[in-house]
Amino acid sequence: MGTVKTATGARAAGFGLMLALLAMGPTTAHAAADDGPSQALKDKAQRDYERAIKLVRAGKAKDALDLFEGALPVKNGTSDIFFNLVQVAEALKRWDKVVVYAQGFLRLEHETSDARTLQAKLDTALKRLEKGGTVPVSYHFDVAPEGVELYVDDVPVTYDGPGDVLLLPGRHAAVARKADHTPWKQTLVVKKGAPETLSVKLEQIMYTGTLKVTTEPADGVKVFIDDKQVATTPLEALQLPTLKVLVRLQKPGYDDWVRYVTIERDQVVTLAATLERTPLAPASSLK
Image (cartoon, rainbow, N blue to C red; front, side, top):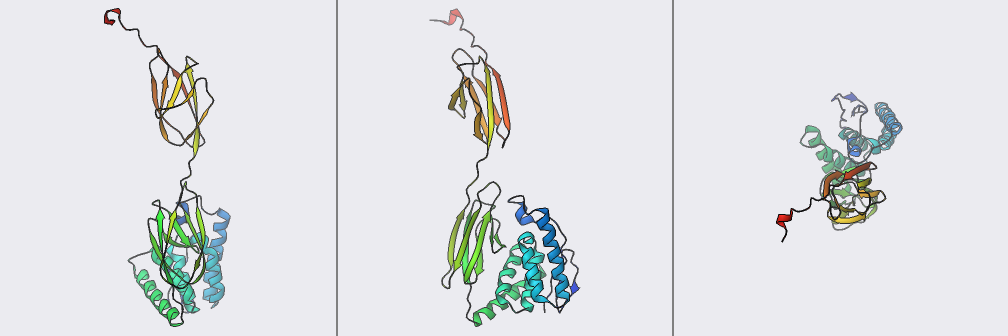
């Protein structure tokens, strides 16, 4: 059989398999995009992972596979779980799952002896499937903006820019996410045939903050944000996007008052401005 990798590099023998003991830690793939899974879910995933290793040692590959897959949505930011999934799936001759999970491993880990081992297993699994009449379809994801994390069936496909993955015929759940962007979800119905290309563009979420402006004189001061007049004092609080903006206050007979202000999410910025009267021109300068 194969081997299964650990976070510490240690190996423990199972029914012809070597198992990876994955230490509990942050899920890096999710952490970049959101707050990630709750601590309760992390704890459960770790328990399931450790139980799966014990089941492999007891020769119960099918039960171990179920538990590894249950832990996958939480632990899919590490290559270890994919290594383990490939070895158990191979022992069960589940070539379809070997194809899926080997690609997940190779997306996260490159240029290592383990990567070369799993590439060989992926090639073997593809040959076994094709011999049985199952031919995967090549999917190309054209993803924007940069830094989007895209998963198909909880398996990472890309973290930055376009990504390619071999998908077996059937239904697949695709998810893309990036911090401060609206998540994208779609069910892919993969049919036999030519390669497919799918464009995925996430829209940025525009957060806002509050700007309060008081002036002296209190009335009749025009308020400009980035050279666009938005109000005249006295005014209610302004809701603005979380950006650095140029605030200019203007009233005839007074010098302009100008400041750069950074608007922060759900925060209140207060400006109290005193405008200085414009000096009268000397009589000698008048014509």
